[in-house]
Length: 348
Image (tube, rainbow, N blue to C red; front, side, top):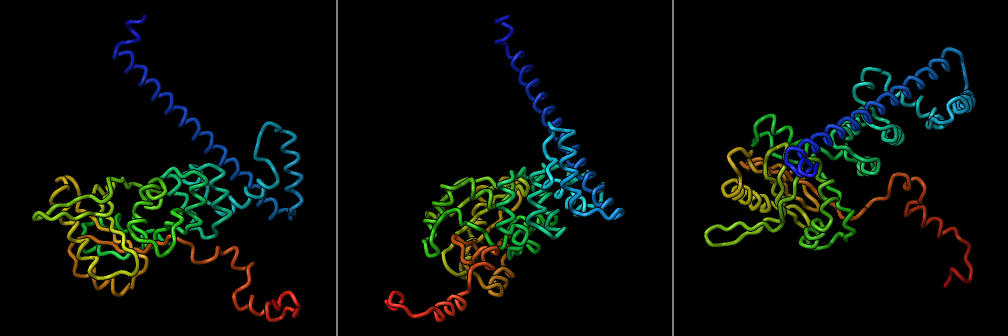
């Protein structure tokens, strides 16, 4: 028996069984989740129909919750709050086929977050599809919604349509954002770009999450030697879906036209020295703290290399929307000060 256990054949057999068991467990979990989601949809739909047809009010939810929990004490998810979400769910996705094929692929907790935070149907679909494709946890999903990923993704200023073949150009455009959120670095606005670069490497997981799916980090300060002179690329990445190297250059302050020329030089160097025959053309991403759209478009119009220009931020410059309606504006605050009664304390 000992001899059999130590053989390569046995280990291969064991590993194949482990893989099959893991796949089966995953499929079973997904199947259970899908059935649960569809059950919630049907419950929500039937409640809505009876409210409409029979004129039932909101009190029926509380009674229904109590009766269902009494009948199924071992079953979670039958609280009155969850029944309300089931109604919202069925109302938001009235098409059963779409619910079955798409929405039911993500857990109920994710669906609740999307229902809570997003009203627009297209935005909801965007976050559902990204959750499916990228396997987001609830925390990551919440972060991406709070960071307005939908509004940022695919909005970078680029020349991809003129420099990359289709459909590569469309995929590349979709991947790059008009603004990257580096608030997780906890750095001031005026910090040097080298400090930002070093901090991004120290927070590589958060950095890759912000870049999006498919990016692999290959190194920082990648050396390129030409005619005996050394040049250093800030960040060298590879994107598995594009099958292309991505050169990222960080610049503190405003966009300058000369930045594009230097980045184009780096792309040529990677194409000639690093890129393999099966790789697609190297893509450049220039990250600046601010940029002028017209100036960027002028600079990219005559560049033959695929380049995108985006902004980045390291600090929050505006209040969250939920606080904007609570806290007074500067004018309101000044008016409040002006109307305070004069006392010995506030004179000081």
